[in-house]
Image 1 (cartoon, rainbow, N blue to C red):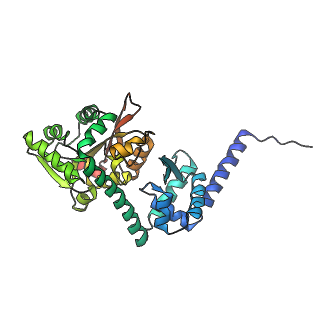
Image 2 (tube, rainbow, N blue to C red):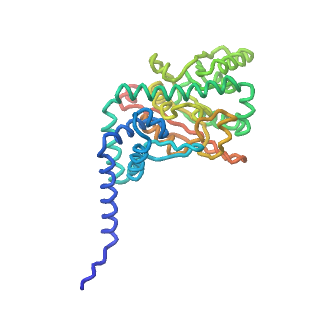
Image 3 (cartoon, helix red, strand yellow):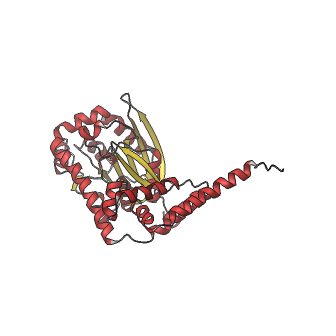
Length: 339
């Protein structure tokens, strides 16, 4: 009797082929392809996906398990709910490169109108949840926020990072979600023109009153979302979002919309919570998301065509961590030659 002992490289080859076979099986279903296209820039729960796709929860749960086993989706728990998003494929393997090419191929096919409309309804419902919270809790909001982190801590870090960007044009800066306007005085000193953009009229009025009291005259106040300015064809030299992402319905969309607003070489600065499990912030601070992993922000930026710059991580005594990140729109070779 002859005993054949598998060599380590043979075992690795068999494993890789098995993974590719699993991946191929996951790709071979039209409903699963629709799920992956919906998750391009969204994190969605099972019930939200069933509502969009008009399908049964039990069947969809099976499809999500298949996608998860193949490494095409990743999960995150928010309270009692599980949200799904596209996995970030490892680019140092054949499987990762195949997944990336696969995503690019299905993204070329536009979503059906009915799916786009239902997805927009979910975004609007999330946004309304956030607006209702702030309108009801505007007086207590800052107190609750300071239970997590003092504003000066992360804003000072953003200013330090701004100072280190030699190529930063000091023309126009946009602050997304300025809240009570605490950061606007510093920005008004750093830039010629400041745009304060918020979807809460009450917060925007507080920011306006604070700036007026301080004698600041170079701030414009806009009510709405980033997509509004993108549709207007506006371009800016810098966008800052301090502790905003965990309040917005579709965090990944912020990167995509910011990329359309940023001029070549311009930067997006984000300070936000790292992933955590302290669910009390949902009721007390109106948080929609329990922070984000480093890879999530990096992946969304990469998908939007932005390049990573500096990063700082601030550990807090109450168990939270804040990540302060810079992403920028890279200049093309022709644009560099023109300069």
